[in-house]
Image 1 (cartoon, rainbow, N blue to C red):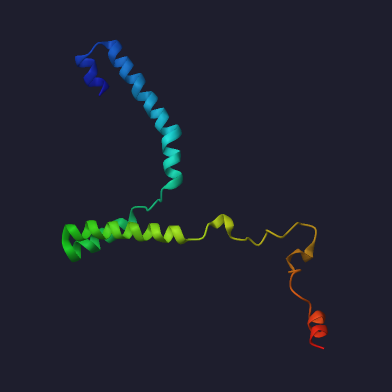
Image 2 (tube, helix red, strand yellow; image 1 turned 180 degrees about the vertical axis):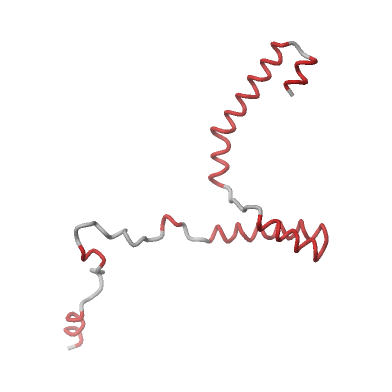
Length: 119
């Protein structure tokens, strides 16, 4: 675009256009893309390619397009109902380093308490 502008416009106009293009690129990279990436699902190339090949073999180009849409929809549903990894407990959650009994569940009743309640 800028090279074409050099051939048909004045140099200062091309400079202004270059500044505008660079400013828009910076705004997109700094604000728009991070907000979009936080809410989007990365699918990757393998699943759509395999689904498109199978859909094309079965129903032609319409089958390829429809099967890709259905596959992405299924992946979005799977991602929506999938557990958040940050909420899952890890083995080191209760470990404080000094106390070896930190892994014992204190909420579980002891056997002596069970015997006393049965009698």
